[in-house]
Image (cartoon, rainbow, N blue to C red; front, side, top):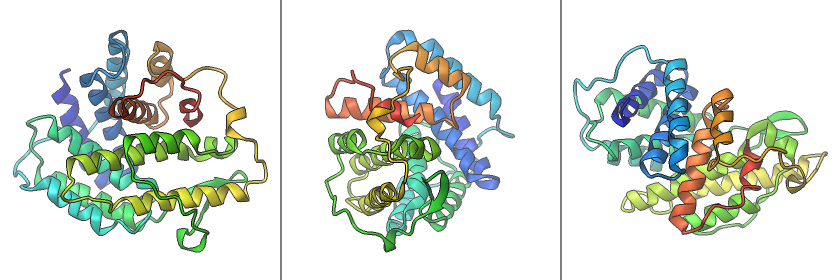
Length: 293
C-alpha cells in the first residue's frame, strides 16, 4: 500500500469514530504517526518492513466500513480547526486529545493532495466538542481512576515557553510512581500533547500563539497534585522495565505487533523521535522513554 492509501484510511477512521466512539480516532493517529515516521526516516531503514507490518495490522484489525470520498471539499479546513481549538483552550481537553487528533489529521493533509471534505470537518468538529465537554480525564491514584478538578488544586507555577527542548525536558524530568503510570499512561500524553502543541504553533503561528499552553500546564498541575495523594510512592526512576523499549530497535516494533496498546506505541515513538530531531538531540538513552509503556 502507498502512503496516500493510509492517509485516506485515517481520514475515514476519524469520520467513522465520530459516529460511534471518538476514542477509535486513536487508530487514525497511530496510522498517521507511522506514515510520518517512515517519510521522515526517523527510524533506521532496517525497521521499515516491521513498521509497515504494523500499519497493515492496524488497517486489517480496525477496518473501516467505507472508503474516504470527497463529494464536497471544505474550504479553509485548517483555519476553522484552529478556531475550534482556540475556543476551547481553557478546558483540559481530556488529556489533550482534541489537540493531538487535530495535529495528526492536519499533518497528514498538509503532506498530500488529499482534500478535506465537509464530512471530515463535521466529524472533527463533533470530536473536538466532545473532548472539550468530557473534562480533564481521569488520573490513577492509589489504584483507582479519579477525576481531579484543575480549578481546586494548587498551581505549580511552572510556565515555560513550549518548544521541542522544553517538552522533552518536562517529559524526562517529571516523576511519577510506577503503578500510577501503568494505570493511565499520563507521561506519554505529556509527550504527545506537548509535541502536538509545538507543531501547531510552528505551522499555524498566526492562529495559535500560546493559546494551548494553559491546558497543558493544567495537566501538569493535576499530575503534580496526584503524586501527593499516592500512598505507594515508589519513584519512577527505580522501576524501569527490564526489557529496553527503544523504537530504533526491531524488538520495539515486534512488541507493538503483539500489543500496541491502542496505538500508543506508534504515537509515543513518533513524538519522541520527532522532538529529538527538532531539538537537534540524538536519542541514545531510552530509560526515561520506556516508563511510558
